[in-house]
Length: 249
Image (cartoon, rainbow, N blue to C red):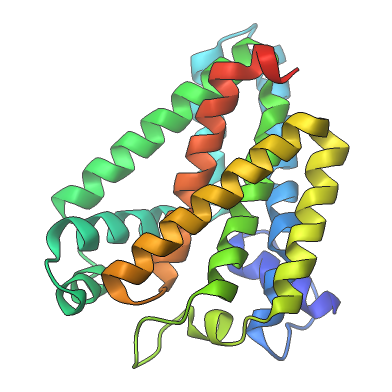
C-alpha cells in the first residue's frame, strides 16, 4: 500500500522519496490528499519563516511561497490549467477541444488563465500571511487534491488513444475514492474543525460541477482537466479563506 504513496508523491511533486512504485498507477489516488497536506505544510513553514525574516513583507513572502509551490509541483497542474483554457476557449467541438489541449504550445486563453490564477493565488497568500491565517492553505491543498480523485473515479477517460493520466482514470475504483474522502475529512477536521468541513464540502461540490462541464464538453476526463480542476478548486478555496478568515475562526 505504501507503494501507492511513493507513486503519488512522485507524480504530484518533485520531492525525492525512496521505494518502489505501485504496480497499478491508480493505487496512488488514495494518497493524493495526504500529498496535498505535505505540500501545504512545507509552504506553511516557509511562509512563517519568511514573515519573520522579512519583518512582515507580506507581498514578497507571498511571491516566494507561490514560486516554491509551482516548483514543488513541477508546474504540472498549471500546465493542465493552461491547456484546459486553450481547449475550452478555442475548441468548438469535442475533437477540436481535445486536439487543442494536446498541443504543447500555449495560446492566448491559456496565458490569460495562468496570469489570473497566479495573481489570485498571490493576492490570497499575501492576505493570509498578513492576517496570520496562512494555516488555511492546509485544507485548500488537501481538498483540491481530493477533488482530482473524485473526478478520476466518477468520469471516464476522454481520449480513446489513451494518455498520461489514462492509467489513473481507468484504474480508479470506489475504494480509492472512499479512502481519499476519509483521509481528507480526517485532515481538515483535525486541522480546521467545522470550518474545514465547510471548505471540503464546497470543494467537493465545485469538483463535481466542473466534472459535469468536462463530461458535456469532451465526454470525460484527461490529465489536463485533472490539473485544471486542482488549480481551480485550490484557488477558489484560497480566495475564500483570504476573504472570510475572520469568520472561519
